[in-house]
Image (tube, rainbow, N blue to C red; front, side):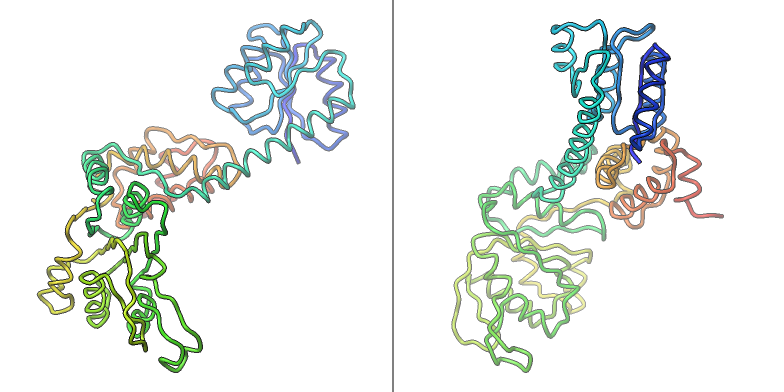
Length: 387
């Protein structure tokens, strides 16, 4: 059921509109002036607001301006018996959805309300779709480590240098790779991602280099590998520390010669690929333990970008929380929830073993389980471990 707020200092008009709209199936709240209306908007989400212009304490135009600052997507329909063309134009310029003179034509009013709600739905859906199709997420943070990463990306992205991104699970290594690709001369090409840890060792070569039909039992047709798919673009090898030694040798050849051979094939295929690798392991230690090739390490690590853990950049938590509140509430189609300072401080004291990924999940949990404002008590109840 859609919620409508009626703001008018004339009780009779509020009552009449409330009865009509309630009959149409809307849930109605009333306010006698702009100040009371602002208070209700802070306490509850509304799909449409009907607002008189001439009111005591805070008039309709002032209410419109203040509400648009905090809730820009709520359609506000101005209603007045004292209005002029100039007043109507001013209201629309300041963000009003429409202007209707008193006494309102009920058919026009109902149509305007339906159209306003349709617009609200479209705006919400558009925001969700824009986030889903956007090429790369924002790299959020103002801490010194993040500032250095951004500076490094600006310097190395336009080059062809291979990059090794290191850091714990969940810190955002993939995001660094995406930013490098987007700022590179290969941005118009494909960014192809391979999670080396998620692919069985016996299949990783076929995944990377492709295979010919009949090269092994399940090879019922020819397959184009990730290197060929990324030709002219960027290949992101995530968790490369988990790659088999056999596959490492073939990746080394591809980097050295710019050529690959499909599994079961004997033809060299030229590939023009920029490789960005990422790992949560200490590759030099893996080299000592004979799990990783030293020559491949040197090929991959022309530039090393280390992404710090969230525990090393807790000053960025307020910015990250704000970003997640906007994104997640937008995805859910609800008004952005607020969070108080004590709740932020409690989150900054938490030990973030899962890094950014864990923080995002925690914010989503708080949005679901908390009220309109997330408090320290919510963090203690839903995030911090019970002693």
